[in-house]
Length: 544
Image (cartoon, rainbow, N blue to C red):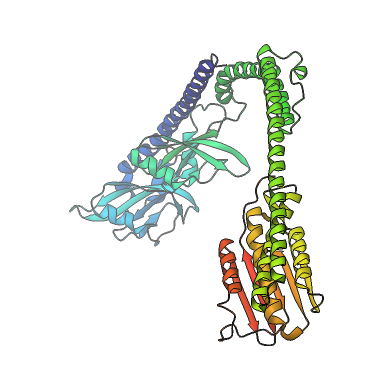
């Protein structure tokens, strides 16, 4: 394929050069036709100018018709002969009408400034009722002062006939145009862009353009000036279509190398597909099988008649999968041993904490001071919370995460039993979403709840007052978790002097909130109860 690339590039270069040469040939052909057409028109205009110079003094003020009759056989395009005075008013005309003004006063002013001859652009003649070109000759008095002019009109369409007098190639049309782009003698269009004509007038050289027409083929148009006048020959023919020789020749020059290149490319693609791509697709499927954990799949059996290199790669993948499978088993065994050891540690810690709790119970029964017994009970509750944390961890399959629903339910049930809420006629309701939190958060959360519930029972329901405590745990849209504890007890003024802000329980709650990097909020009104909320931000869960 690489070897054929230079051939393709050479073919493209050859096609480009052929296309340029074909365009140049076509342009030169139209330019040659334009030259012949210009010669015919130019000869007619020059002849008219010569005859006007010979007969201008014979026109006088009454001989317009006679001069017209003399010139008509020599000038078939002649439409009128008119004599104007120095002010540009018609003194006589071959049509018999007089007293009208010159069509363009600028022509008269130009003749007044000693211009001997003047060729005009195309204009619509009022007397001839047709588009004409005019040639003016200045008439002087014996003293040399301006005495007016004699004009002869040449029919535009007739001049176009002179342009077509030469032998034309097939499909070529010749017409004439004025400086404003008006076209005379064309069967295909009556106007070309004035910019084309002006560009040709500036250089006085033939130029080729392409005329786009609605619902008709495009035309190649050559515009060439006729002598020094503002008359232009317009030579046109349809632009070559796709199936013309101008298109087929470059296409053929490029087509053969392109066909060879395409056939070679197809052959290479088929070979690559048969020898490489088909087997690579199978290797990709095998890799996905191994990625799903099916390491016992034999990759070599799926290769069949694959090339030796592909078969070797499949065997290497099979060996790699076997090594990964063995390492996976070793890791799972190591993790299982580690988990068993950690669970055993949590179990023993929990047992030791229960022993400490038993010692505190024995010690508390021997105390007579109510405050001391209350302090021992508070310490026992905190240690019980730690024991429940360790119990939850060794009972849970995943050591790094804790199911908050199971954990909090066990903690609150144990705490309610230890505090004797049933005997106090205090109801605790629980509502937890199925949320998991890192094991490191379990201890501060447990101790926080112990302090909140203990304080609620201690302060919210004095003198054996009954009531309700509601504990909820819910997730937020941002991934955070909101823990709420509310009661319908006595309540207090949060900003008042009696607010329990300096006690040990309040200090511990703030400490646990900081440890969790959580936001603690306490709202309460006297007689309306208390609501304590702890918002814990999202934490990335450990992998399963």
